Length: 198
Image (cartoon, rainbow, N blue to C red; front, side):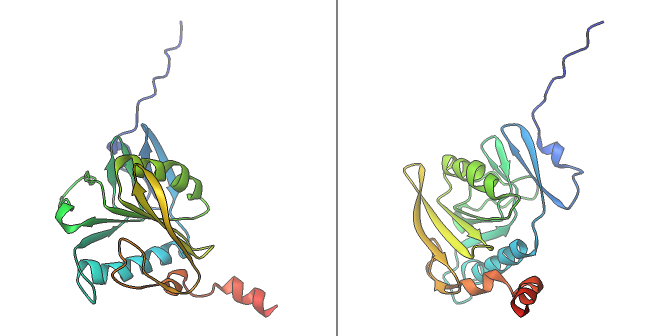
């Protein structure tokens, strides 16, 4: 008796149910892709950047208001589901929903590179973000202490600026206020202190 051929069925949103809390899942071309949750430098950079942006741009604290900025929202980009580290919509385009992934393409996303996601963020996500019409993308690298600012131009990413180190910068589309890069990199890690002492 012949064995039945195994049929590969594309992943759906239901496949996200029941995944452990310590992973982040995406769906790309019907494939479920799961990464471990990032390490502290990544988490600290995401939290600090969100804090610096939400005050002025969502709540109008010393800034122009007009944005909704969220941590790790599930967003459908055409047939793909991604979870950017941060995403922002101009208030007039923000989709207020109660359930399910967001379906309106954000105006800005930020991916924070980590060893397990670096290639996926750059090679898979960035081209699809451009294809779906995200206006701006930031790539934050806590290890290299760099911020790359990209703007969508004629369907491709244009590098607007690359910032590094500890300075204060104005980065579009949030150039109405200064960001303090030094706060994104966190405190010196214990292992770094031990190396310096030796």
